[in-house]
Image 1 (spheres, rainbow, N blue to C red):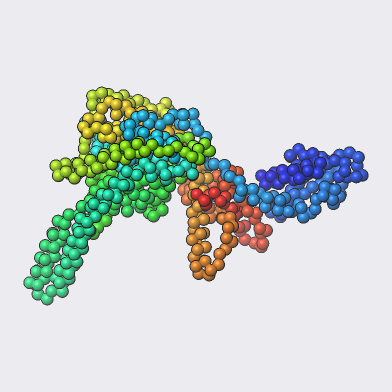
Image 2 (tube, rainbow, N blue to C red; image 1 turned 30 degrees about the vertical axis):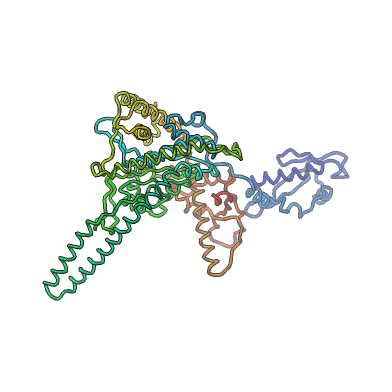
Length: 622
């Protein structure tokens, strides 16, 4: 590829001097190039190489025996010109590599079914649908993104406080995990901020309101804990049985008093990327409810083992299913064995880049754990390249109505939970007769889609098997957004079905384009992630060196790495041998993500050094 590119530039240079080139390494020179001939003659363009076969330059040779020096002179070329930076293949190609934009590894070409199906914004309650429309128009993103985040806001408002029961003995919590796929530069943060603004504002107010009571409870607990410790010390050092008994009695009475100190639940609603242990700690304080919202998808790095190499995500997954979470956190009055979160309800509303999601899908642990089947995906057509620099103005009335609606829903759910009559008991919703009919029809239809060999969801059964449950959850959210009763009507179920159908189309796109049907593509994605890890490590090392010596090594130079380093960093566990990764490496090179560094001449015996590459700047920029 390097030689071809170099010859292309040579052909261009020769054409300026009257030579006719055909692009395949040959040229026809005019008569003036060789004065002793009165006709044109052929010229062969060849590569010069080093001892290892690496292309180092370009050479010209006349097949009719014309002296090389005469050809160069008459073409106004010099020996140095053939080795000039504009001619040298490696230097020429390296500069072109750094300046060009790599070809995306993940296709962003719209699929017929996935992108022509608009998000059913009309299926949302009017105040919420209007907000999804005006934010999409203003920020210039798809309504699928704002509509899905609207569902996330409803989930954050109601998750943990409501459950939907379509049939006797079957209940679904209404918290959702939503994920929108978006390219870099698609204004993910701005979109999330608009849709989650009422919850962020309410959280600040609630936290400020409860702060004095929580501070007083913390003070009481600290004082009692210190008194208990002092009584225990007296008991240990007591010289008589009577003194010891009195001290033990005091310690026990203080411990009982400590257990009765009421710590009001935290009013925390939102969190960003947190570790699993921090997540459990936060949910313990909020009595099981929390919402993770992020525009970068850092939660997936956490789940992949960024902080916990065990890869055990059980507690995180329980936040979706509602299964009890055992917290090992002790202290603060929780007792020696921590605390159990009986009905956890975790909402997740994130927007991530295709590469982040591809790496997540390729992770065998995530596949085995069922993590991927819990998310509701959308991957709409990108607006990049078609946005109006001015943009549309936000509809102030729609924003006001949306914020008031979300705020009202969230406050009423929390007030009900604090009512002594129903404390810690979620609101249970059932289906009307007509709503149940719609539910049963959809459940039967979806079940047929899971049939091996004929169903379109058969290959994604881990996700498709949860689709009906997701529809029920959505129906519960839509109902609570508009009604105070506990019976979900037909319209809410039909609207939930419409949204679920949209989500199933996008899930098929996500799993179809990002699944292991193309293992080399998945490995290439893992390599990109590996390069990022290597670069981060190198940057930390350079910072330490600068602190110690004041020296800065090659500032601004492209990041270099070896194949051996990359394969170790890529963490691709399904590679039986290193050669398994070579096709993916070649794809990265062909797509313009990495560039091979010419190997130096091997000196002496020993193993040849591992081939080196430089990374395209865009990898490190993201």
